[in-house]
Length: 348
Ligand code: GN1
Ligand code: MG
View 1: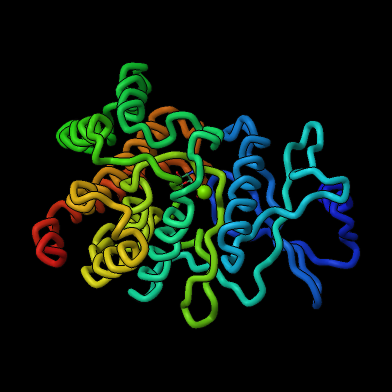
View 2: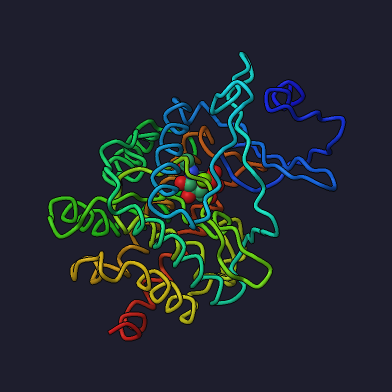
């Protein structure tokens, strides 16, 4: 199968080795390499992204905009097939796309120093800022309601109603926590009605592994543009909180290792605002910490809902993994909430 895909790009797999790479939960990714060349091959999960060509079109529009307005900006646009297509489609297999490998780049899975958090926040901020003149209505909605917290909450309560045997059971404390913190949803709903909050070109998946770094921890390039859609800054800043503040990620079972690191919080603030300071309104900035609560709350809801629904969305490697992820995110949110006054003081 992969031979046939590669043929569409005139890559003869006999002359390369191909290795699975990345740790995404949705798409499958491979590194194709030989001593002189490297590529990234990806299969788009079309159970989740129902219209892969919409993604391809968004990425192409953005690539064209950036290359005409900011020719020096490094952007990894997909390579077209030899017959000019954005992807190679194989019936029964799905949609495949090829990216150039950015020479000298590395990805990291967990943030190891505040510099990395600063760089990533800056890179994502820069991406939105450079696209502030881009006509957001031309973007296709690749995942409808992706960060619609009201709907996520609704799906959660629907899952509870459906009476799966996993509820309440050991999920009970998590369910109670989510219900008790519904004020996070209320704030989201006031934001939707507040004209001080602007829809911008938003990445919607700002985890650290979606930035390519050089070997000196300098951010090079933003990747994984499947969920680039109009959105609010709380989505991007929120996922930075979720994934850069703690030394361990959502897979960690020992919650005592979850920690809110103040220097990393400052790095996110400084890095993001180094690009977005003039873009964000006063009210948006006042909701900077809220962004973290919004996103972590939503992610906890998403993992828990999926656990209750028998893991229909997120790939899992062991029974109960989505429960662990949900409990982990609840612990992270609790620790963030406890630290909120200190964090506020840091930016006031
Ligand atoms: C998914 O596949 P990946 O890891 O890039 C998810 C994100 C979640 C993340 C949690 C399309 O992203 O929203 O934050 O898992 N993407 C989609 O690890 O649902
Ligand atoms: Mg992603």
